[in-house]
Image (cartoon, rainbow over all chains, first blue to last red; front, side):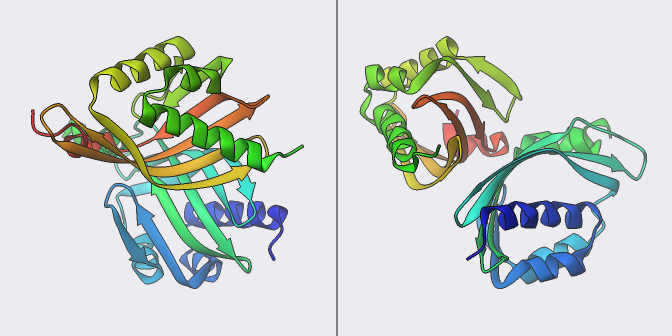
Length: 130
Length: 128
């Protein structure tokens, strides 16, 4: 049994790891059978897919996960936050506002469902200027 | 003090009311100060405007369904993930994956946040 306090801490560690590009920490936070689902793609991906994707340069110098509002329930959390990015060319676009529902078992994240608006990607990355 | 069963019942009542076209029940789920935020414009919509939009949908769309509802309750609110199915007049059934976070005061929704992908709007609106 993971307490709600521990789940909240786990959620913060998860986002800190993302912010600091620490795939090794994410690796520890995911359960072996962890599934990551994105509304933008509409399909389940494995923890390996997710960790591999994190190691790929997505064109940003820095990504920060801000305005975190976390609510916790008995087997997981929901976090609403804004994702700010600075691109390699210095471009800073409007933040992406994202919501994630995470499921937790025995202190590990077993599922991530991510909801974002892909129509905002071009402005965020600066592709709309090119 | 958490009252999870009451919050769950409120969540069900809210989405069931939209499905059934029961405007009176729908309206009773919103607190007087209710506002609804959407991820496509990041703006808070007023209670009156949101209710008018929902009422219009309930009166004009042949069918609205919230399928695969997954609800979790937390202190002060709930989160529901669902796939919205909308049957349009031309028979097209549009779908949209939605995450709805509702904050609750005195048994009513006082603030809600709705996240969805407008990049997939064709799937929802159909051929135009």
